[in-house]
Length: 581
Image (cartoon, rainbow, N blue to C red; front, side, top):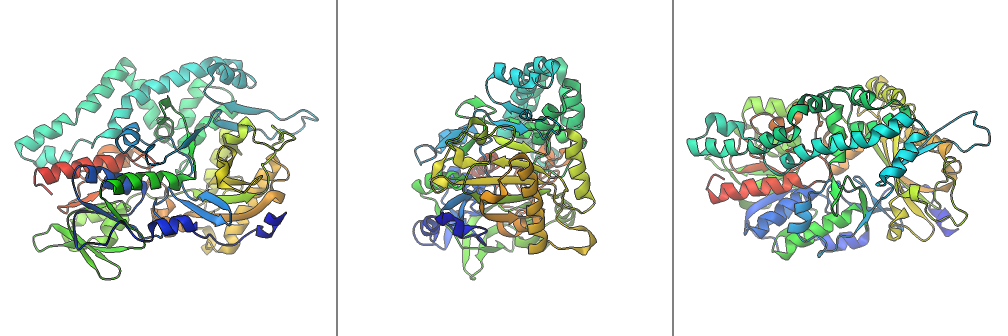
């Protein structure tokens, strides 16, 4: 096979079509705009699209050769297009689809059903096929699957989903508005205080929805997810499968208090009106960013790639007046929105003399630990799992479209993987979420071949014993992951044509994710809502007049949601209208 020559191809290469599309922005760079957005990640693009629609002339500057931030498509092995960082879609706010007319601008989705597959490693089963757990949108089929492990859990599962649905109903509106502006409540003029009080309404509505069950729901937010799941279920495979949503992307164990909220963050999404649905973007995640960018530029926004912002300009009166680019060019603006992380925004780009010392200290102390190593793999055939062997035709089966959970037989396995990382070691038996987007989108790979996304944890940013994440360590860890997959799907290693290994330092270097954290900072309770990124500065405004945060480091946090960009744009527009910016 000609593709064999590509085996273990080294290093990513940009997809030429993307480079051509965004080597320059729409039109020529002007010396002045109403608003500058730093970073063309999905939140920055969303902010630009909304501002431009509201009549605010906006320009976006992106450091890399390609737009999208972590929501990007790149051709790593020739002929194979990968969602190199983020890889699934669910959380993008429904209003953004509608307001920005993303379907009109080319967005196409492939919804997954079923959506979760957990094969077991079972010794001593003889010729019997190992068990597996397959979950989707069919409630009756879900109960049949769960009953293979526990009849009691099969009966409890619909009640559990109903319980979570009510909590999601209460929390969901909080995502679409700025948190209560505590600074304005404490220090603002009377009108500002009254406006800030109005932002309490979503919180009051949430309390009314939860009613007398509020204490039970409170426990979901603050307790370890293992405790929550133990209350509902007895079978370990089901509990471990559900627990993955509580720890994915987070340096926490299922036994860590507060892990329940991370689970909610991953189940509160919807696609095309289907609550909790996840899907693949046709053409990879970069196609989503492309659709948002198309919506923005159609209304007059300008987007420039390979334009690195190195400094936020501040005038003598202590207000923002634009940015300076790496080539020395100055671009003036009334406001600057940063889609970069809080650390990059406030510790690297903003002149420190204009920020309060206490604020700088808080930003520098943010928890950005990340457990994630993302591995992108090109293969010449689908993996064939012992628990669900491939069809003779080699065509994708329903489970191939799922998030496939490996090393998830029980919660103790997940906790031990976490403990390894706490000791500075890559997990000996890592938690693996394996996705095959080409099972539904054949445009991503050559005929008969596939792209595989491996979202693995736990891997510490800093290794023990003074070791570095050099090529030797990276390949040793990837080999360990592949050995694990081989145990579930013999022949997997022989199918590999190339791979791209992104450890936490790689994710930080390439995508600007602090510590490699996909959320721009931990989604722990002390770094959410009123306190994201820090207390008294959770309303997208910063201590520096005219400088705003619009990325995942702001409320409501990470994931390909777009809410931070949308919310920040509305705050900026109101400030411009009221001459507060």
